[in-house]
Length: 220
Image (tube, rainbow, N blue to C red):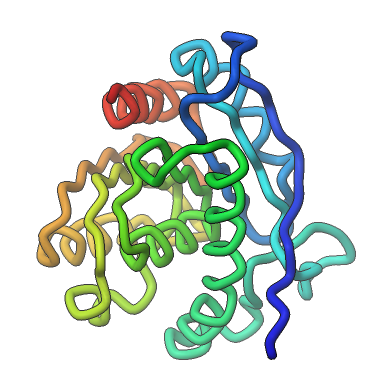
């Protein structure tokens, strides 16, 4: 019997000081950890006061640096190897989501996934393969792996917003258009926003646009 590793990481409670009615899970990029994205929680909690924020650390030590975590190895960046990596890690994130929702008495309809870089890759892979649609997926500076598999494997179709700097030299800017086309072709409602002059990161304008999307998704 395979034992699925349990994820853990920093959290940020609802600004309302009440029990969470919504859950936002923040997924970091390779070589970082949950602390890298939990800093998004304070500004987002200003517009999502009923949401709790969780930022789990990736399940593996980063194999390209002496610090940080990763969701899967990027030493071999051929599409087949990256797809195999994300497929192996997806059950770990799925289990974390299931447990986090159950502990709070929430459902997928109360959940949003927010990813950066490799965390966006994880979000775009895991969310559509869950039986019930989450409220939304917000992805910064990422990519959709295995787009050809999406029409056959998607079990739910949450709304998606993708934001990407057009000067990104880590995850090429072209990944934005490719992901948008694949998601649109598979029947997803998808928004995409290019950030002029932005490299591999999140700028205030992008965060504002993403916050607006999350408010719309979680309004119910």
